[in-house]
Image 1 (cartoon, rainbow, N blue to C red):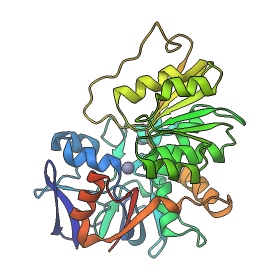
Image 2 (image 1 turned 60 degrees about the horizontal axis):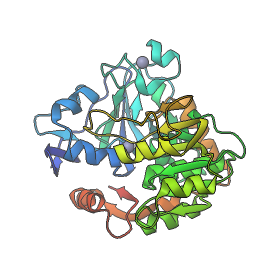
Image 3 (image 1 turned 45 degrees about the vertical axis):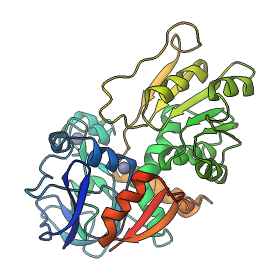
Image 4 (image 1 turned 30 degrees about the vertical axis):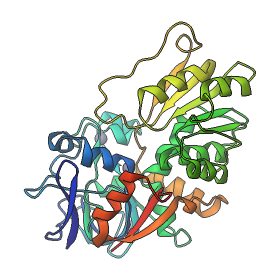
Length: 357
Ligand SMILES: [Zn+2]
Ligand SMILES: [Zn+2]
């Protein structure tokens, strides 16, 4: 089978590998749709292979790391002990899988599972291949309803779950004001999540005009381009200098994190979903801005578990919501290295690339 492999930092190649076999509790899926994620760029360009091995124990191969953690597939083979899915089912798996047994999983926090061998939960790898393997399948796999397209379903495996969770874990309620820093695919999902959740004023911040335009599609009322205006001053002015109820940090830089801390009201919440890559620490001001005392900070890894994904799929099926405009490009699996180049360059208005075998 063809699979996209990270051979060294900054480089992926298509290679011919054997189709994986399911072990106990595992399934093997035949890919129908895959995509590239912002996290993939960290994994390919910045993370040494030892870090990847820690995130996805056992995923490494002599040739390198099979890439991709978001896909829709049909069940090709079922390992011993799996009862919830059968051959031929069309399914998604959370990009971070839980064992279903450890303390964190029993709390429903599958993405910080400590029972799978990885301290940050177990990252699925290999979705950018014709076949890929899912461990702990009964815990982590959800069947896709007939009325939900592959391009919709794949979002529930990662960025929709993460973006919507930024809003949920901030405790958003009807009419809450929300500012979202960065409108890449993940930030756009937070914008859509804030709208779906019944928030009031939604302010989207980004430097790329096409992304700001897209954010209006997903529910932003006000857009701010930091190249034109200081977003902190602008957001404070829009909220009569009280600040927003919730500020979402969706890119993973010190500058956006700090800006988020500066625009929340007293008692408000900073909700972080950005992936900071190898950034060792972020800091926030204590004085001189309403930024430290009596505020909450929450951070979220993509929430998984089949119940979570079934709920998201139910929302996509019945919730009058269309997230598919996120797919700006369609490519073939054989062109995976080109897809990485396009995604890295952020040119041609690229947001999500739908990749079919
Ligand atoms: Zn991802
Ligand atoms: Zn666990």
